[in-house]
Length: 163
Image (cartoon, rainbow, N blue to C red; front, side):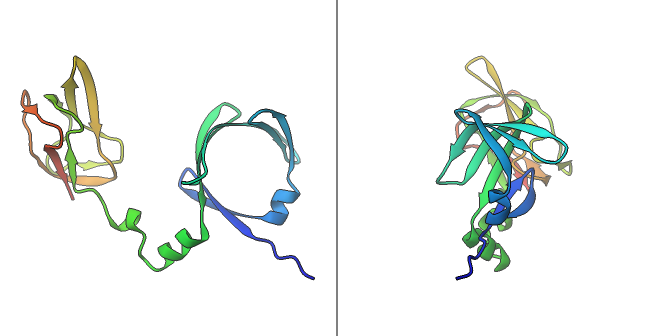
């Protein structure tokens, strides 16, 4: 009877890798301590520590030789949904950035027409004497800014409109 290898798809830093179960079986590795593994290839040895693993979402945070990496296990059903063009995370972008808490707008870091990347600071919101940076949830263009400096805002109030 022929044994079939099952491919496993993982995503690291937005790059996808397909690994067969045969490749995993042939991987030179050793459990060093609880959640810490040592992997070896022909030229190097790598230490990987599992920081967090969520079985339900298939997401894992690891430290590889001191560098933090986010890893996602891509399920077969997710690949099929993407191939059909029905992937909600790629087709549905957030168009309104809302206040996550009540506070005071102390700084506006973007302007209408600006091209911003994911993580770019848009608004500084002071709440309970702490500055909270409200960042772009994805790459976008600023369509409108719906608040002004010094304005008090309630939780859920639209701050910035993206396109």
